[in-house]
Image: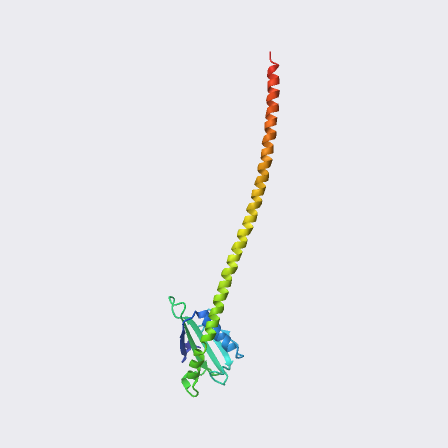
Length: 193
């Protein structure tokens, strides 16, 4: 893998889980050991997307303080549930520790990455739970909106019923007025000679 403008030896592992689940799992695992993650960002940064743990102690790999560079990406556009994880291990001077071979970093790192499976499953479950909670919240909001619409429509119906009653009274009063006016007209016509 290329990092810091040079080719680095990396451990590569594939997981049958989405990228977010794998990323959350490894970051949580390494941070739980007292290390701090830093995400590489920036428009012109070629290392963008890498997660760096500087001067980190991952006891499953080594007791030394090393730099762990993790890059996680989806295997392909079609395989969104497949993720590839790259792990580079450097010392504080930026030397590639995997190619040195002094300590069996590669075997320890592979073993560490293979033990991530339960963490990834847990992370994936949490992502699914949050997604389902969002669906439930959305469904509840829609239900509440429908209830509010019903209350509004029922009020309009009551108002229309009141208007209908008022209109019926007005029609009745108007009929009486018509009868009075017709009678007055007949009275006037009766005065003709």
